[in-house]
Length: 417
Image: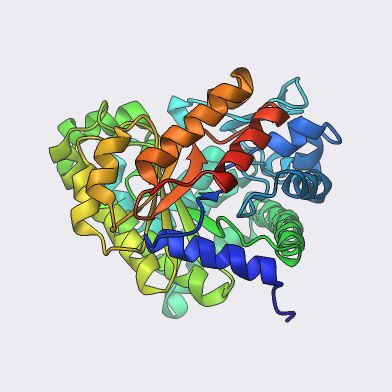
């Protein structure tokens, strides 16, 4: 394998020192982007990229060459439409499928009939893999409904072999075929994504993230049970929910360990946090239902030599001290949104790398001068002593090029300890 070039090593060291909360010569700047290069340059559409992931490469290479961020972000949340179509996905709308705008973002549908019922928490807790195969996949993908007939929980010895009879039935075979075809399409997508990140690495950019996992609680909150249902279940079905979250934690830990064991390039892992914020979950509820599972996942990534990046999607002022006091110093990144940054700096100094600070709406609607002022103020508050990753409070889709240049130029030239 070719040794990464000198600029790659410089950027990697800046990243590692920033995570370790060491003083650096300048602030690390690498705002999280999503559709930004696609929409900025207009060479392809989001729909084009969903049909062929490799078509994203020229736009993403062009973005990194023009703005010179310190880390590379590849295409995110761009699901391959051919795999979704082939599986008969019931839970998403995307460009070319119910969304006419070829540059529209995907939308998650709120389908009550796709959710598990509260009395299924214990069924999941007892047999999570079987539950996913026989209950979840058929509800979410119409092409996989035949899996409802398959139960291999007792496929032991000769008598248990009779449980394989459904595998010979047309609905089950059809589901297997749909899964095999989707697997082939996802393999091509993974290969294209790896090529994009490999190209950027060869040009001098370390990856900002190598994979993503959910917090164990969010498995139910996001997908299996739904946001409102899961929130109410903390009150109405607390024991059942806790049992399920404990199982989900074991499954997530196992997935993290398997990822690190089979994909040696994985170093930085992002957790996008979709619940737990102050407005929806009390401190007591958080420490009971949410934090233990997330903490275990974070600790597992650290034990395996990785860097966990926790992306908090709203205000967590009432819980910031939990992170500061219960995680090892110099190992984690926390992206903060709508939080009291001065309070966060006081609590996290020397312990946790803070990511954020820049108002993403300014990049789209504001003036160059306002962006410069915002970046300087963020550096003034968050950079002293080290441990500041200059980022935005949104995943960028749209921004004025002159405002982005102002952000990066200020980050490179302005430092205040």
